[in-house]
Length: 292
Image (tube, rainbow, N blue to C red):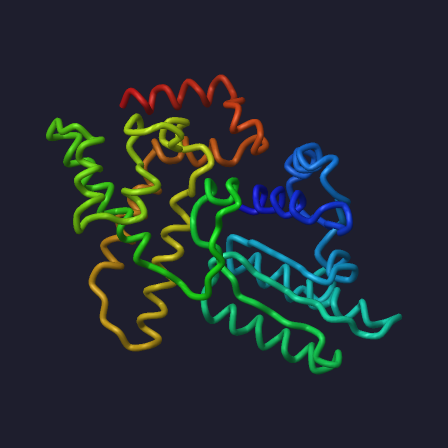
């Protein structure tokens, strides 16, 4: 998600603004620099500490609680440390910190409190925004993401329901395009059936036509369900759908066929994946999966 978001941001900023980027994947950084060449002033910095010292707006999109805490709170290389260090030789300037990942409420509160505490020592010049993005990697590429506040379990649960309904249609020999048309004008319509369409060949430009490259992995979906379950316990609400849905995602993650697709997501640069540049051995395993 972060890669296409950064590409669109650089292209939209123009030459009058500077863009600093940090990424642990050097190959992805090289690919990013090539893709945005000529669109703006792009510099690679060593870590978020250095980026925050220089930047007025810091945007992160991180996958896990561990990553978020390390990136923001590490006393030597973290964002807050960088913001504080920037005031050593000059007066504090306003800085906006935006986290766009889907992160547990307790950790977001911890970050917000840490930023507020640091800001009090810096003439209230630090602001923190929790702004998870809603949509998909396709939306990130198209520049049509929605930034929201909060956690939505509904989309994840309906993913399971939609997949089960479409699988029933496949086994029953139904015309899947017609089935989706009926669902999408009926009470079963949801984002998965109207936008994602996990079954290939029902319409062009679907992720399912390209081995789901560029789509979400299952792990973030399972994480969102876990976060929702924790939140319902915190507020004292009884739920019945989150646990079986979470169990379905966990079962899928253990499936050997999924492990091959997960490996596909972990190799190469985004541009390579779009162009289908994958290893011969991995391609053979993918073809075996397609036949199974």
